[in-house]
Image 1 (spheres, helix red, strand yellow):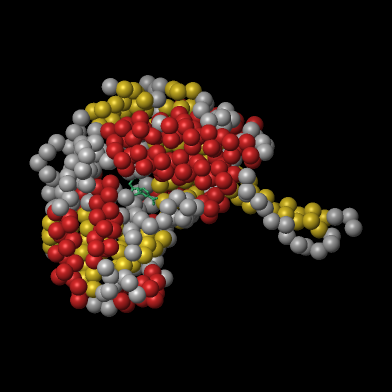
Image 2: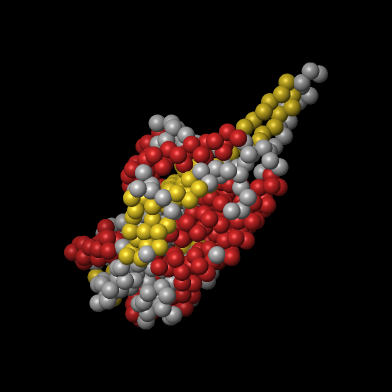
Length: 475
Ligand code: NAD
């Protein structure tokens, strides 16, 4: 089995212990990775601090950073095929989707390369006696804690703007899916950035992750993961008032309006909840359907769901891939069981297919809005159908969870569709296509889905702080 290393202080580094990574499609071990310990975390933070202190990322002309960013983007594109195979093996996702992660990662580097030399401050008029201006300064050492569901693209989503703005970065990769990120970091590490700009560690969240987030050298935390972990990091961050970006979970609703096109809706349901086996923070986990069309939509959604092909990510034609681990599979199955015990109706799926690997059949449940299955994140291929009687009721149900990551509206009358979209509590609202948008469009949550924005031009401001310089002139 191949053994993967950590990257600390510009060297690929082993550790005393190793974590075994399993292929979710077979349940078999497929590789090992060096398991960082607290001393490794200290060394990584020290290397990042030394990079910040040398000012080699910040004192150069920004055009130099643009060059490094573009080198990284090119190198990421070159390793996309190799990286995709590793990502598919460790994570279970479809090979093409794994490849798309690398393409997206390259796009993040290209996109933020375009901003690296345009972080312009403002001159503020204060009259003849003063010259006043603002400049954007990087935080310094950015600790980035990444989840397993899109390890490559989520890693690049924070790493690219952080480097573009001149931060040194320490990345904590997820225990379940740390391998493909190693290839990503190798591409970035060879792109010309100054010594100590990037470190990568795989280690336990509650030890190494906690150590990084509470470290004396941390200047910023970017956390993507579960609400519970985010809350524990925020409590720890309060100690030093460390600026944080929190990208947490979701229970996102699509609202179908009475005039919606059923085929358009079905396409979005297919990707919205079944892409990546539903292990997507912005998954369409609830579908709100007008009572007048409920019977028709229920039948069509169940038929589409039952047509999906279950298979491993490297089998051509697969629609529904395995969950990442046996634990995640058990968690999803037990949430379905609890939903049925609470009175939800199983329309299809709800079981583990009889095959090796961590599969759960694509599942559709009928539930009422207050049931746990309609309130809590499942992080699996489970859609909850909920009928509604009026637009006001649909808005109340859609907004009636503690989350607010994304939402969607499907309809043909733009006044009604946009009117509904504007009343949904979410950081991003899709109209007539779930996952519309891209790396160019700001993304992030409200409520327990977190705060701060990633993606788009707006995200760069998560990676800098404004300094105002006010000069009294001798006039
Ligand atoms: P998780 O919170 O268990 O783990 C995320 C990361 O945090 C891992 O690297 C883990 O090792 C680390 N970690 C765990 N405990 C820690 C601690 N005490 N201190 C510091 N780090 C710690 O989440 P997960 O199961 O890997 O990911 C699934 C969750 O992530 C879901 O809730 C999903 O909605 C969310 N998510 C959100 C987004 C987004 O952009 N909003 C994207 C992907 C996933």
